Length: 129
Image (cartoon, rainbow, N blue to C red):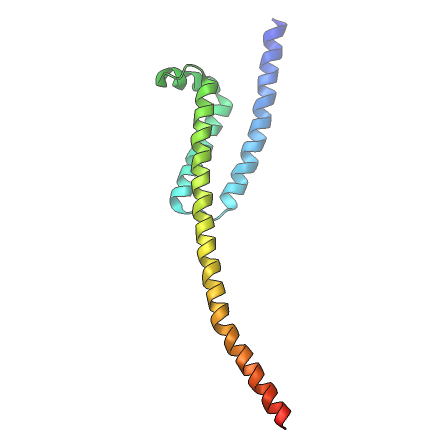
C-alpha cells in the first residue's frame, strides 16, 4: 500500500513539473508571431500535451489503437514528427530572412556608390576653391 501511495505522489509531482513547463512554453508561444496555420497546429499540440499531462493513460489507449504497443513509443514517434515540423518552420523562416537580407544588401549597394561619387565630387570642388 505504501508503494502505490508513493507512486501516486511521484506521479502528481511530475505532473506539476510538466504543467509548469507546459504553461511557460505556452506563454512564450502565444507571445510569438506565427502564421495562422502554425498557430493552429501549435495550439492543437499544446492541447494534446495538456490532456496527456493530466491523463497519461490515454497514450497507452491510443498506442494500442494505432498498433504501436506502448504509450511511450507513441509519444516518441509523435515527437519525431513534431521536430520535423519545427525544422520545416525554421527552414522557411531562414529562407525568408535570407530574402530580406538580399534585398537590404541590394538596396545598400545601389545607394552606396551614389554617395561615394557625390562625396568624391564635393571633395574635388572644395580642393579647387
